[in-house]
Image (cartoon, rainbow, N blue to C red; front, side, top):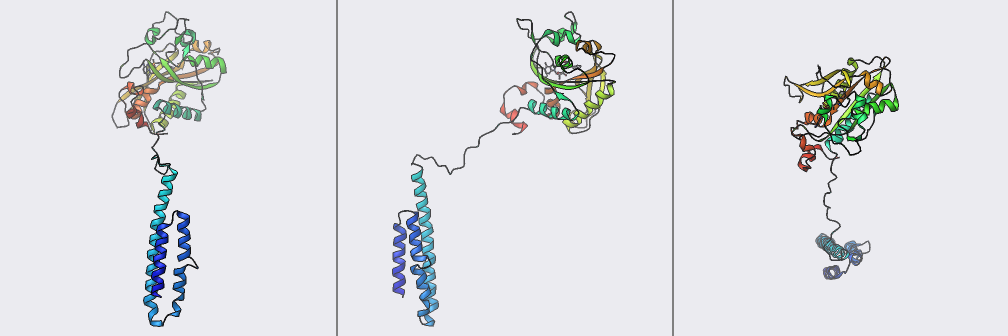
Length: 335
Ligand code: FA5
């Protein structure tokens, strides 16, 4: 029987080595190790041997079986890689290699903050509106109680178009546009791009983003303004903030305020930082929007979006927002 075993092993190994593909190899496996395979049958015939010879011969057959299994596994791996090589057409492209990571980029921090603000204000019952970036002088200045002769125009120098229109200097023109369009009562925010003809430095850009807020109803007071601003800042900065109002002048509000935030970076410092101007809508502006100031009152604010993001993340140079440096932008997360 040992001769028989040797013969089977020799033929099996030869057949495994010469199998030309995976299917041929499977046939080899079946004819030697399958249910009716030669090695299997040999093992089954063990009973015909004298009792004392069985363990030693059984061991031999089992060892031969394990070696054959190993050989078949090795050959199978070889044949698979040959098959893959052939499928690849030999051009070196391997579809099973992990691909290159494609960066999906992220939303610009100004876009992110705009979306967050819209969500917060929608929760407070405000609708988001948009106004044109190329604006009529009327909405940007006159309707906001800033006639041509008013010195406030000097603080908001802009880029004029040859047709007499201009690049809007703030989002406040949306106030009167929204009043005309929707009437009162009214709760609206208007985020968007603004432009000013001014020297660029670490805190000033010629192109920047603001978000206007306007609430008009009966009996609106400064208390409503304070509540809305505190709610907004708590949501955006993720903590309770102390705010204060100082008198500030803007022709389209009366009274007008500068709103300051205490401990702006949440580091525990005893410091106030000017965040945004706001105030109660001037009667002339209500009139320009077709509303009766005897019946309606309201508050408005103009939030600088770069400034808010700078406070939130401790950014010190406003030019980073438009600098195009990916190392800066990538800090604001993948989306
Ligand atoms: C205004 O533009 C008023 N329209 C705001 C307002 C609205 C007042 C409603 C009252 C009622 P001001 O010029 O201060 O105000 O600008 C508001 C904010 O816009 C500033 O606090 C600042 O954060 C931002 N801002 C103004 N100019 C620039 C600039 N050149 N670069 C970057 N941000 C600016």
